[in-house]
Length: 377
Image (cartoon, rainbow, N blue to C red):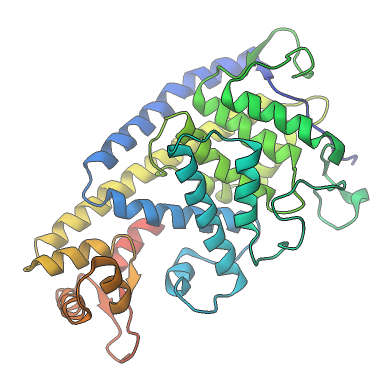
């Protein structure tokens, strides 16, 4: 089978039938995201869960790339002094995500400069880190089952075209005018055009797939492309905090995800199927995160009923941002003395709100398994 080569510049077009299906589904997903945002604003654990959700996203996105680390693994090992490379890769993803979030809320647009900054963070001290961290590739790359270009399923644009394609993508993201005569050369008659003024969710689907198709770096394109999903939603103000991530759903259907991404490339792109897949994944994920937040909030409120002192309440709520924790970590974060924290944690264990292995005497971990069960369902 011949490899698909290259991708057209933006904007894109879809068949009218697909466009109608997209517009029919769009309000449902948008409304769910709106309810999720409102729910976070009224939850007693919303700020705590933001960190947990970004960690979960970091795990799921790196798992798409083949990393075998689980969310429980990350919670157990995140504070290790000498973490294995898989944990470092997940940690780098979270740091890049946080860096991008801070840039966006401070008014920086998604740009080539920011994308290169994020890539440097992603690739720090992990696999592929020696391969032009923070710089676009200078050679041809390809996607395929082997290291032979003859077996490739997709061959991206050549390195000398990356700058012009990334400029086209940047203009599309930020709504700047660009020469549409040379863009979107795959547009056909009797189709609907999704340009830079399209709905934010649709644009996000297009931005992610286009970045993946340009494949501007030698390594890390997939992880960075998924970070762009949340940054796009933040920049468009569809969400105001990093609370919505879709990698968990993409990872569940990895083969379909890759196949539909490949489908937007080449001379006969099928953008309609990709956008519909992305919106349906967002729909399922919005339902799931809404449910998780409801259950986590209920767990937190029920636990508070059993807390007898202010320190117990403080420590209990802290475990919703760090469900596998230790006395020194809680003390550092809450500013409570280690003795006060230890007494509070042990009291929460006695009340069956947390678990601690009583056979462990040093560096004992206290685990909020009920929260972890909610997060992993």
